[in-house]
Length: 309
View (cartoon, rainbow, N blue to C red):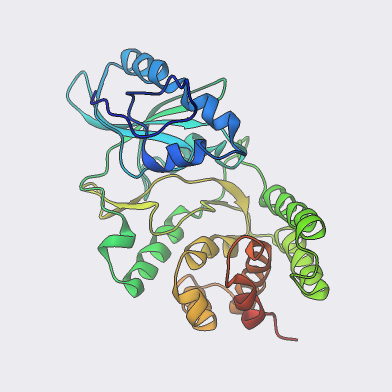
């Protein structure tokens, strides 16, 4: 394995020559992420253990990588090209491996093996070649079409006994978190009536829906990679079960067009996905208000897409 120093996490840090990708190093260095920093310090011992267990030869991690995982190309004993993903366990991504097993390579990268222990989730996955992100490979309007096509394939009813959590659990958490932050740190930043209406929708929209399908919830153009087996494959899903209208949001929230012409983007994605425009509008309004405390411009978008009537 190539070893190089990428980041420090303290004066006497154990992670000195081990390659830690940029985004993970930056996230672990934050004052509010001591658990992540402690976990990163285990990687120099953990990665070789996994390589020995799964009989892998592994290369340097992908750059800039993600905030919560160490991901690198690897080769199996029999010469197969794979990817080793070693992640810090967190609530949002708890069922990533289960989601990949559920989709079984149909629109998403295949999962070959996985283990979960202590603060770590480890996966051995299909390697996407050339692996170019959709965000860098296609113009925006084509990106919309690829995302819509993948979502249509991923939306399936879950089997009996599935492990996936209901969308209500995530939306309730976000609504509670938003209200606490607004009261404690940003009173007056959001009109009280707007805040109340948005959080009411955040809680009610997933409950009133009878449309129960497995959702990706974090599908955007940096989580779709060019591949050989299929033109595009989804990676890094965060599965929940609930209203498919919700699943159009993450792509929209990651597009510059959202702040320039949100209504046009909303209508385009609703039409591509055969979703009710007004229902998607209510979801987008709620999410933009919820995200507005941390992202500039989202409150203005919320005002522009506020439900009519």
